[in-house]
Image (cartoon, rainbow, N blue to C red; front, side, top):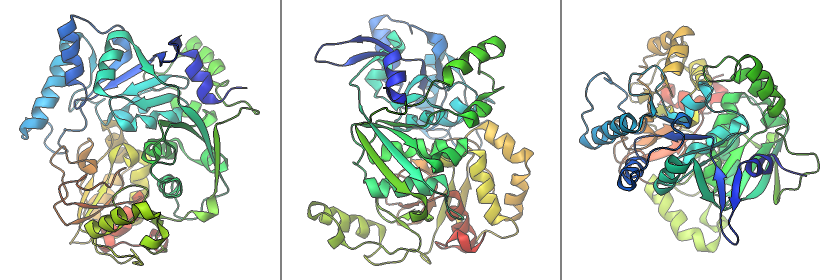
Length: 464
């Protein structure tokens, strides 16, 4: 009997190459400005056109500034990349949501919220965090630029079929524990290579009880433990989320789609290549202390000693702590914070801003903290304003910026200065990821909000 992954994968196989890869049909290609220019140039050189242009959606997000988007981009590299995407989409007749377009935003936020991402789809993008879309019950994964060209030209891709893993998380999450904490906990337990070669399906009561926003966060971070992607079986929550969205099926097409979507679950006796399980009560609000997302700990725990690490990794472990300016046995609570960032394809959705607001309401931003609040899309921006969250932020001394990837990665103006500490709701804390010499601690919107108003790492449970 088949797993959910097998059902979707097998139904999209065009051809299996003997002793080689599988030719897989792709339902949706998302393109942004960073990984597509060479792919479009490749089409030109070969005199090709996109095979199924109606299945391709493009928008800039990585390089977009989060202020003054109505003015020309100042950074020459960013401007070149964004301009190239606009020109390429015009030349090849593709759908393009440019800066200031009401449908613009981070591609992994826009896809689901517009109903472009649907259960049962195969979805690719030249971006590792494409795994986000798996929360809708899709097989979604990141690809390289040469593969972007392949999909543009043929709407197919050559891939080795990954192995399957099910991660079950049972129980009930405690106060102040969010989907981000669940993800960081799982990665800390699995390590950054623990799911290499696998496609992960998340299951269990914790996963079923997560909101759609929480599921996006969990699937988004699958890649950080080496997985090819992550996914969650669609259920009534998924269907309610999709219903009525702009590109979602309507009328008779909706009924037909629903009949198919309801079959999208792993069979009761489906066999996974690997099964892993965790308990909700073991998870507390998390924070990272090192230079990869697996170096995370509960807020009440201390930084592990090098002795607790495998011998081969002890030197790099120590180097990581040196870079961060931390020591073995340190407790992170009370450590000073210079910057706070809420946003990215991990935590740039409406629920994330509601959580942030729940802490900062009636409080004031610490004057020593620079805070960047960046919605994941213009739709999220509109939701923030409709719900009056912008007023809560304003009264607390925060300013809402314009949508984009922002301080997740140093490809735009939002860079953390060298040596400064940032509590970030994004997905990666590699050396220099948020700017040369920047020191990043990954955390949930609640932990970020607590740091923003206290100026130091603080347990948000004391403020809820």
